[in-house]
Image (cartoon, rainbow, N blue to C red; front, side, top):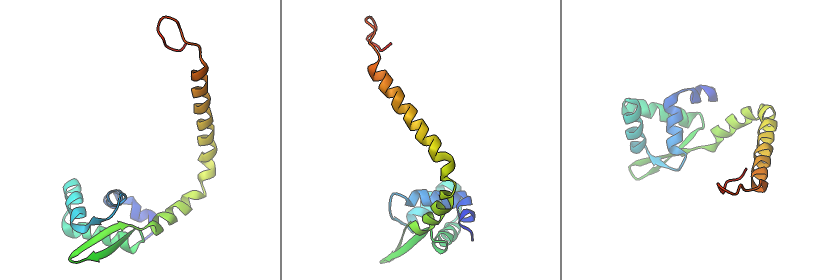
Length: 120
């Protein structure tokens, strides 16, 4: 399955969001996703399997629990693909940062009005 097909599914994207802060037990993932999307444990398990097999999630056993976490390998492949388009928006973001900094500098150096105590 292509990485963007994997990420096209809102359930799988949400699972990755849940895993982003750190490991979660499969039961916790099932509970959160089941409540949010109204799907069964089996359906959540299928989504976790797709994420594992496509390189977006890893699992490790701890006694009877299965702990899932984000696998950066899948995210690197997405980043690599998107990287070829960065030159379209990075100059615009750099220009925006310059304008924001210029505005802050101008506000700092603006004279204070006598009555309101606010800058002119």
